Image 1 (cartoon, rainbow, N blue to C red):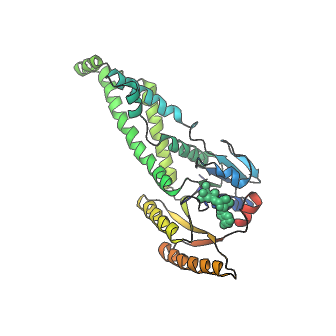
Image 2: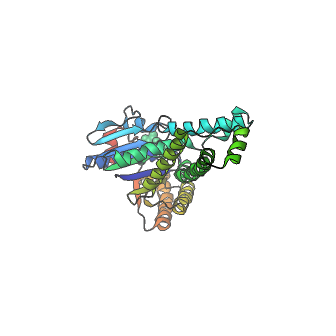
Image 3: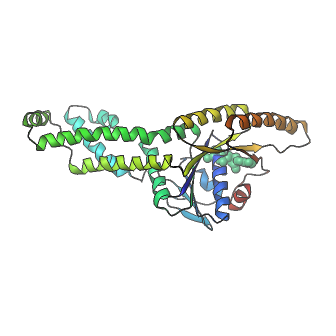
Length: 303
Ligand SMILES: Nc1ncnc2c1ncn2[C@@H]1O[C@H](COP(=O)(O)OP(=O)(O)O)[C@@H](O)[C@H]1O
Ligand SMILES: [Mg+2]
């Protein structure tokens, strides 16, 4: 299993840049690295300056990039279960459109992206997988989803099994009343699909909780951004995720004009606050570059 680093933070702080820079630096140190983006904003390719597709592509020696496709992956398992539920509810007189809505798996699409990441971490043969996540609030929701969904899917399962057992077993009266109600018995492939999905979701949780996985919070040295970073930090801790580094990005490196000096002083105060808040986790400083760090070479230097 590879080491997994998740980068998150408030919108626009430099998550993609920092994630790609970390990956570029690691690859130059000899680490076989995959940098993947789960943010539908698709900016990983822009940062690397190359086209990034749904399969890992080598963008530099030992550095691969991938835009995780939330749609293509794993959807089969859920859609089989959903088709059965929609049919069952429709038989009971629920409007098919409403039935469809009722059986939507909340957040399914985003979680499918995590299934792909899990596969890469477990079987991809990488030393390091760096995941560029969506902004903090969405990421928190996403990280909590596998647990919620596993419960959701598992709750479906025993009921289905019970019905199936009753129908094939000796409890005829119940079977008869169910048949009268017109509820179709889930076929084996439906139960199997639900089981497969639950197992896959458990696998995602195992990867997220692994001691080889940690979160890196990207922030800027501004009070408003730091306040959100602290809230994210707290929520992550409550959910049992480990943050092992905070990156304060776009730090002014001083200057002679009053404007820059004022910013520098204000940022110093925020950084001191950040150091105290996150101690003993290190708050790394990344300077405000004089140009966007775009392309592998610029990113590796930034890293
Ligand atoms: N330290 C920096 N110095 C200069 N430009 C930066 C720095 N960090 C990020 N940028 C630029 O800021 C913009 C937003 O960064 P990005 O990494 O896409 O943020 P996010 O992923 O958090 O939305 C990009 O144009 C990026 O090149
Ligand atoms: Mg981004």
